Amino acid sequence: MTAPAQRSDDLVRALEARAREIREQTIRLGVKSGSTHFGGSLSMVDVLVVLYFYVLRIDPQRPQWEERDRFILSKGHGATSYCPVLATAGFFPAGMMDDINHLGSAFGMHIDMRKIPGVDMSTGSLGHGLPVAVGMALADRVQKKDRRVFCMMGDAEQNEGSIWEAAQAAGHFKLGRLCAIVDRNRYSSEGDTEEILAIEPLHEKYAAFGWEVRRLDGHSIPALLDAFAALPTHDRTKPTAIIADTVKGKGVSFMEAGATWHYGALSEEDEAKAIAEIRGGAGSR
Amino acid sequence: MPYGTTYNVDTLELLTSYEAYGRTLVELGTAHPEVVVLTADLSRSTRATDFFTAFPERAFNLGIAEQNMVGCAAGLAASGLVPFVINIATFQTMRSFEQIRSDFGYPRLRGVFMSIWSGLSGGYVGATHHAIEDMALMRLIPNMAVLAPANSEDTAAATRAAYDYPGPVYIRIANAMDPSGNEGNPFVLGSMAVTHTGSDATVIACGAQVTDANRAARRLAEDGITVRVLYCHTLKPLDTAAVLAAARETGAIVTVEDHTTIGGLGGAVAETLAEAGAGTRLVRLGVPDVYAPIGYAPELYAHFGYDADGIARAVRQATSGAG
Image (cartoon, rainbow over all chains, first blue to last red; front, side, top):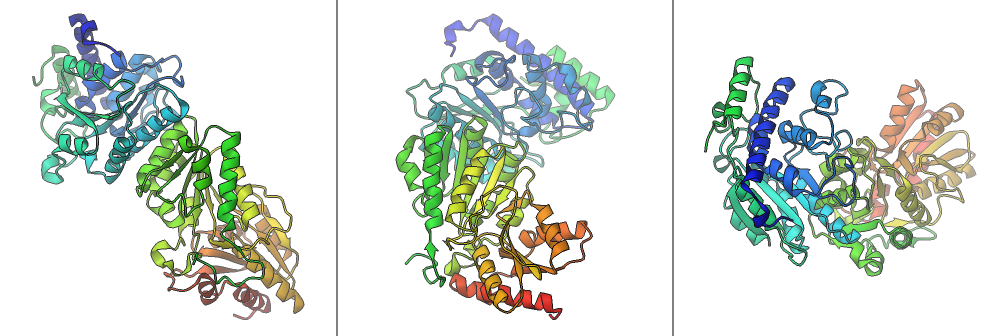
């Protein structure tokens, strides 16, 4: 929807600042939760920010707006950064998350489309998002809409067979308005994806299933803006897979340590340290 | 030769239940542009072809990939469409169980899971294709309605009722169904129909077994044993009032289902009776926690004692105090 020429350094800087805000909120919400999936929540922040604050056609005042683009967080355990993104975008007041995990809260470890405004599909169990996204893209065709469908998956989630059933269908049905993103942060709960059950070569696999594949630095706002700006137009028939190389725990040096911070609890001291680093823009890169 | 052609009943209605819902899908598709149909390479054998011909832009053959099919159905449903997902009962409920549960049950999305080859009705297809666990599995899912119509007319009625239901619906139909079984009772989702009256015992049956239950009741009447037959086409939500009335008003209850005796109709009735403190004698007929041998469906029903002869035998034993 946006040509590269429309991008300015100001936009990039604004989105980078927004990403820092979201990372800080992620840490705070994670602390409020007691313990959470810090690593995979932090790794996908930049992609979420570019989508929600630039790319997606959405209206937070009308979360059920029929013409909106759809976004499915297939890695539902990334809720700790996703929910602050929705709140910041204006779908609900941030204070709504104050009772997270407590009886009756709309917010828990995973996301519920019936409770959280802006959530297009309830997720949590891995391998469910891409099939649903394929169905939404088919719905666009039935209903003659020009919505786009985005699906954010984890990298270890690529082990699920249902993902490849859906990848097969997306290629077969030529769902050019579908975009899958793999948050390639390299680690699952227990270690390096390539040691546990190798998913590579991911680019070649999606290409073989009939997808257009782009691999990029998932923390580079300009690279993400370019990739989403180049998304297929109406006449394009290939679904797009964006493999976003990311760092698990991105933005907090001690969390950028492989699988260590897949899930955990932060001490008060470490919370302060994490937030100071995020504000200072420290960490890798 | 189609499955079930040896089904030896007086007025056999072979496979017309499939044709009934096939026609009903076209009727619903004509009235409601949001109806879409999905199959896993089974449009011909499930008689969904009429819909595929009438509405090709709303019909999807998603290949032999059931998890993706149900996930896609959820995506279509979340976009405001009403998917009818058609499959063989055993694959429908087990291959994609978690998608049905988490993508439909949890968000309470509308969708209809239309399943053929219920129970042992596929006969010699063998245990991989026998659906003896499907009703128990679907009963477990909150928000799900579970339907087992007895004949083609009610298959059409159940399909229409499923469209109107505000959540996901599971419908199982058998390969061969007799046109009798409902005796003019209207199909009302959630309520049982009395298809034979009597007071010595009650037989509660679902699906194609209602025909055999009625047949058994007529035979028993000749011997002076009167039987109430309750046609339970809706296992969930269950008409518990009808079950408890039967417990109060008749001497014993026999449940009949083409399904394992665990967790389906017999299980639902047992739960209802036990919670109400009803001390009524209960006999559960069905598949007794084993995999069925190879055989034609009627042979299998006789083998496990839930054909008309077996039902009559069970009622005699339950009402005589023997066995």
